[in-house]
Figure 1: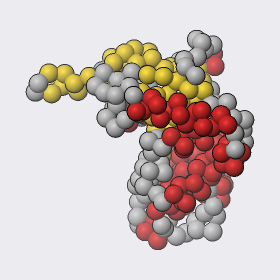
Figure 2: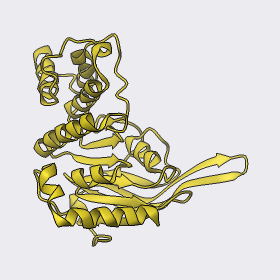
Figure 3: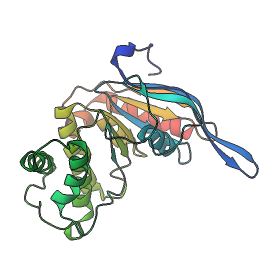
Figure 4: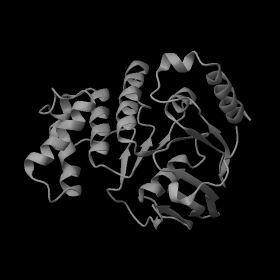
Length: 264
């Protein structure tokens, strides 16, 4: 239940080498991440957990290209990340839709940018396909303001997948939802991800969510100078159902391992 052997680099989608993040303060440098090393494989689903302030979101925003790298590098398909790009789809805790636009128009915004050569019909088909996948096929022309929080997050999921990114970054996307909606959207996310097989990295505080979704769970040490503290392989087969996982004795071993780490 710890670190893996060195991966074959040809199968690595994301390679973080000596990754460091420093914020200057009046009292000297505050080191959030210190020489962090992590490889994420192609088509892998990774969850990152750790206490608040351990640099999980900082790490995710650096991968997204929204936060400058202080030291080391992040390679995506062996190319260094230097800023945001459509090869990384991001699903935030709040989907930040444009309220005056319809569901379809909100998804179309990014799709138009990523597929500039596509015809209007093709663009519509891409948007409708993913909105249908998240259960919003009948709400294409509803304004964002008419949607519940859960429905808005469904739009956020559709929007990210519709860009056909190489990697999907999820920053606690279900953190603001009630438990029933949360479970529904975890199922929606997994169903689309199982089909698309995009590399995914998710930040979560929820141990059960991490186990249900991930192939590996990365545990980060508390900051400052956060690093990888432990790595847990989740060996449940896919596709997964909650019922199967809850009936598997390994589930409780995994859960105990994670909670012990977080309480340490």
